[in-house]
Image 1 (cartoon, rainbow over the protein chains, first blue to last red):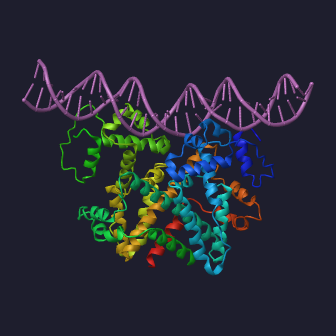
Image 2 (tube, chains in turn blue, cyan, purple, orange):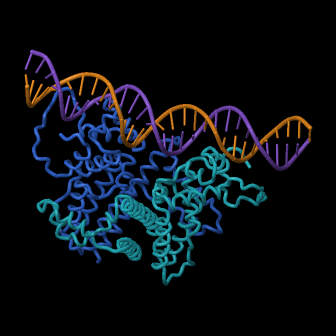
Image 3 (cartoon, protein in one colour):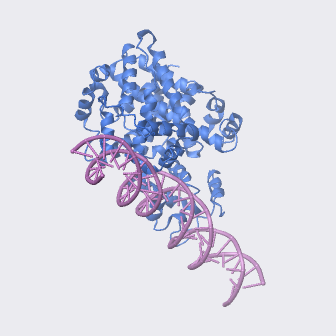
Length: 239
Length: 239
DNA sequence: TCTACGTGTGGAACGTTGTTCGTGTCAAGG
DNA sequence: CCTTGACACGAACAACGTTCCACACGTAGA
């Protein structure tokens, strides 16, 4: 194996890494897979803010310097994590009769993966969509939309918009969740409190907000998400 | 004025700060406004990553500790910046005949403000929409949509989706811009290079991506943005 | 078999970040 | 005049990403 980790990253991007001998050497050496697993564990239990070089190194029982033999940066680690997440998505065989449900299904999978690892969508937003696993997901979604007879240009731009929205939505709800978990109990969840705040606004400046405070605070679970997804998907159907 | 900066933030949120004596004390004291100005200057010239307590303090000719008498956190500073940005948006008087153009106009203003301060949309995404200036914008957009006869529930959720998308879009393009500015010249802008990469993918795994590589790399300027905005706004009109 | 080497490991350290402590300074009130 | 309170800021602390360098160890060559 090469000594320069940048060359290793390049080697990772060359899709089939040939078939190197798995080399099950004894005594648990540090590998990229183990680093990725430990990092995802950290994010799942403590959130993305707690994802530090030191925290993953600690989970592996070593120091932070040991990671840099396998990973270029923290940005590289982020790329690995998103790649792993994307690799676990199941892309359906395109069915022209059910293309809307299929895309919604893929987006819901992405949403659930993001929310399973709170805050990781921030890494997804700050990353160049160069990764092969991400392109695999894009390819799958593109195939579904094309099977649904969506125009190619609308399909590509629509996929871009969908992925951006899903990531932003998950980032927002992740932040709201962990804020609610930190500041005592149920801070955002308490709809009555939020509704009271809205109606307490100055009536002269916020007439619409006050009149429709119930709609502003409405939505259980992922109603908002489902609405926006349907909005965009149905829009793609009509052009 | 109170000594505890948290009380000051609370005082800022109480909308009309009464009419305290302006107290034009001599010798340029540090104020929240001056901090906000200096911070926006830093972001505009060096990007959001360079926005440090030390950098704004340096721009003000002092040390970082001086800021904490006027600002609770860096998160509080972010909130101030977004509030300032929102306060500079002009909200049109709702015109039922032109509501689509009006929302697109507001979203375009938000976009241009975000892009004027590269990377600041990250702060917008990571913030609770509690701020009064943000609510002023929401109120304005809600008034426009309601004037356009959009159903209240669709209007509120649609505004949420629009603002999330605009922020995510600006974050992505800001990152792409500064990556292009750092890594030599034109790294992302070079469409031929990108197209070449796409067509170099394994044809067996990426048939759709390769076939529609031109559509994937298409779009000058904000074509993608305009497409998605039209997609969502037109969708809101039909429900 | 011994030896030199390359490779992965990890303790220590550097520079930078957000944030706090404590001291100094200056204007207003008694 | 002195006291008092608020403000400014140098210094420091903990934690972060990252790098340097010395050490251990399995393997190839003499």
